[in-house]
Image 1 (tube, rainbow, N blue to C red):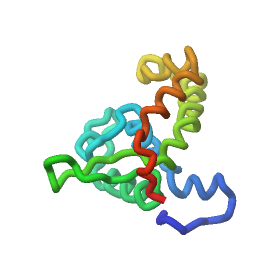
Image 2 (spheres, rainbow, N blue to C red):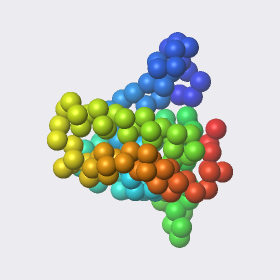
Image 3 (cartoon, rainbow, N blue to C red):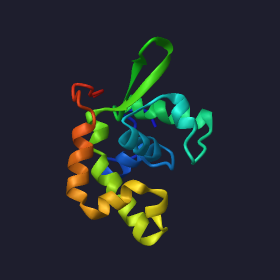
Length: 142
């Protein structure tokens, strides 16, 4: 759904219009854990996102100010994706979803190594990860 289009004024519904599919939060996860990514990096994730879906989700996230696309150094064709400060603000919610999934759905510690770190000290993990992303908080696509 494009920026500005909403089904209702409910904040949950409006948020889900942006990142309520199974791919968008995985893109945010990858940007959280790996800081910056190229289109090709996303295609190599274990979830095997189709390229047409990836292109669409990157566009939606960019249009809604969750991510920004920067020029790739020394390559005018490639783009470098990064969380905006608006996207960084999603990290605590993403961590809570990961903790819930680890508790109720799977043995996530093995497939999500960062979850072990979160379980040890969630406050410290959040502080460290959010301090690293984006150091340039002027990268805010609002």
